[in-house]
Length: 378
Image (cartoon, rainbow, N blue to C red; front, side, top):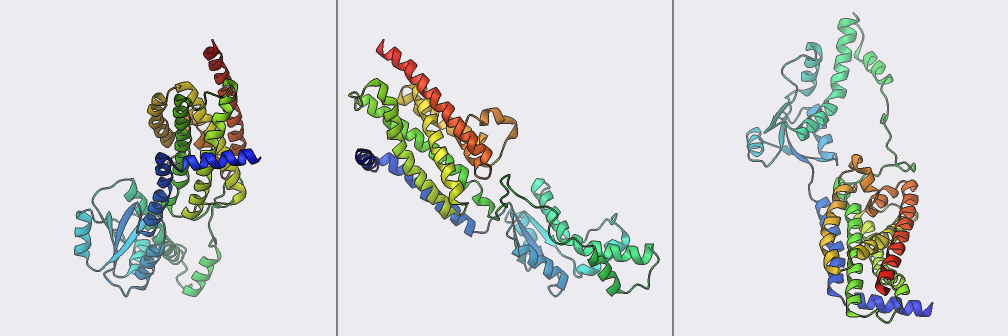
């Protein structure tokens, strides 16, 4: 154990004297700092301007305040001038303008009485073009207006369609409130039963990017080992022991990278629990170790491996659920270590799958190395 500790210390000391390794490590604080800075800034998939012609209208002010307090994917800003707001939309400083009526409650009541075929809406929407984002924003606007509109529609139906004009407002409100569903109709959970955490959407890809960074560290370790082999540093070792030595040398680098990755997850605010993060990170490091060694054995030369690294990382960025989960490419995704890791945080099934994946790749590495060793002896 003392010899292992000394070797671990010496290999770490050597790594931290390698400038390229230090540059790779510096990518993590830059990434986390950039994400944290972006979260503090006003962010969203669209910027919506809100204009209230009558600021004293209680319902309009209440709806606008609720929208601006929402920490969702839209950014809202209250403006004082309709003309300036329109110019902001025209000059691409905002994506849309919502012009509220002077009396929101009366406008919604009139819309309920005249029916859903009313041509002029309750809120005027000004936008440059109509796309998926704008459709999404109008759905959010409708969700804000619907509770008031539905009540006015209910009152009109009871008094005019049902022939009960003498029913008081208090009775109508009491009957209406008795049928309301409290809370959300849906509850989102992960497969392990854990609730879905509320977090800024900008933080969602951080875990996937850090997983790709760990793969980059694994390839860097493989490149360092191949360069040392070319210099003859391991020429004194028997051929049968070189694969285990390669695992050990690269494992030291990945150990440091895993510690930094866990710290980055904690600082970024996407850390779950130690009981989930540590096993997943250790298995990810193990799978990356054998994955990178398998490509090292296949490429044989640092130049070939170096040319493959950008292609592999780009493929993982697209195929693994870093930004999007492309379900139709499952057979290819099962070949990539980050896919198992990103799925295993909330599902133990993929945690076991990553362990089996690591064992299979380790056997493939051993078989390929022994096959190459026989040719080297010959």
